[in-house]
Image 1 (cartoon, helix red, strand yellow):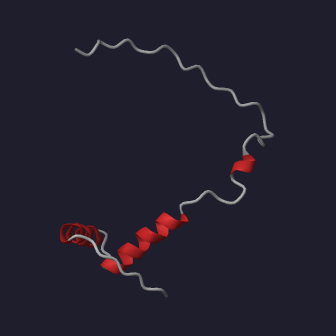
Image 2: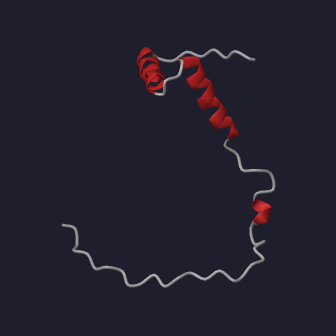
Length: 74
């Protein structure tokens, strides 16, 4: 498993350590979790090719009703 090293200001490190503690995780595991989440947040392969491919009944938006009248902000 690769090791990554980075430098952050002391106040950032302290806040990060608190967040890791709150998540009940060691700092290294919490950081690894955040990095994994960041690099894996991508659209699945062929995701956009699905647009317009619905083959079921025509979708209909239900009646939205009337908008309420609100007082103006002053």
